[in-house]
Each structure stands twice: as structure tokens, then as C-alpha cells.
Length: 212
Image (cartoon, rainbow, N blue to C red; front, side, top):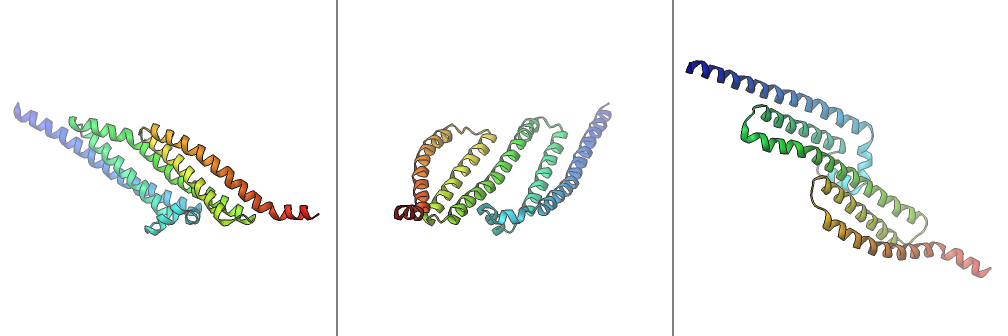
């Protein structure tokens, strides 16, 4: 009878180990395939060229990755990690089930936060550079145009980071308070700076009108 129970337990253990190995292998294959698809898609859509125009993109390039390679690697390893956690969960080890479920529940929020941070950072850089170039083309003073563009980027980055942290279930109440105070000060400063820039652009026109 004891031998029968041992054999049955070994069968259960063998079955769970087989499921564990199958999930890990499938996760590995799916991760490589999906990562390759994501990397090629980003490359074909021209994200590498877009990233080169932003500060975040240039930082990524300095690390030795292109945007397509970075997304390929992140996608691949995200699938690897999830498949490994699912494989561990399939072993039905009581003391592992709770922590694994917590991590699996947190992973979607982590992925969303990373997406918000990366794409939000790129958009922030892009908008800031457009603002600076637009004012420069209009003949505005470089000091104020750079300052306004950089301040706008800082505000957008702050918003992006706040949203990303909220997705990670981190209390951002203090950040919201700081943001409100910062927004009022920034609004006043931008208003004054915009007036100076507009006055600079219109000074020649006003001089002509005064002479007429």
C-alpha cells in the first residue's frame, strides 16, 4: 500500500514537472517569435529614426540598443518571465502560489507603466523640440525659446512620470500637490516669457508702424 502511494505521488510529481517543462519551452519559443515580430515592426515603422530626434532615444542609442532592438528584448523577456511564473504556478506548491499570483497580477501594470514612460517621454521630447524650433523660425530670442521648450518638456515628463507611478499603484498625492504649485508658477513664467518672445518678434513691425 505504501509503495502504491509513493508511485502515485511520483506520477503526480512527474506530471507537474512535464507541465512545467512544456510551459517553459512554449514560453521560450513564443517569446523569441513575438520579440522578433515586435522588433521588425518597430524597425519598419521608422521608430529608430524618430527616437534619434529625442533625448530619450539618443540615451537608448548610447546604451548600444536601437529602439527596435530594445522593444524586441523587452517583449521577449517579458514573455519569458511570465511563462516561468506560470510554470512555477503549475507546480502547485502552496507557499509559492500567493507570491506568484501577486507578481502575475502586478506585471500588466508594470508593462503599462513602461509603455507610458517610454512613449510619453518620446512625445515630451518631440513636443518640446517642436516648440523651440517654431519660435526660432519666427526669430525669437534663443534663450527664451530654449527655456520655454525645456520647461514644457519638464512639465510633460512630470505628468508622464506621475501617470506611470499611479499605474504601479504608488501613491502620487504628494506629486499632485507639487504639480499644482509648479503649474501656477510655470503658467506665470511662461506668460511673461511668451510676452517677451512675441514682443521680440513684433518689434520690427512696430518700429515700421511708428515711423509711418
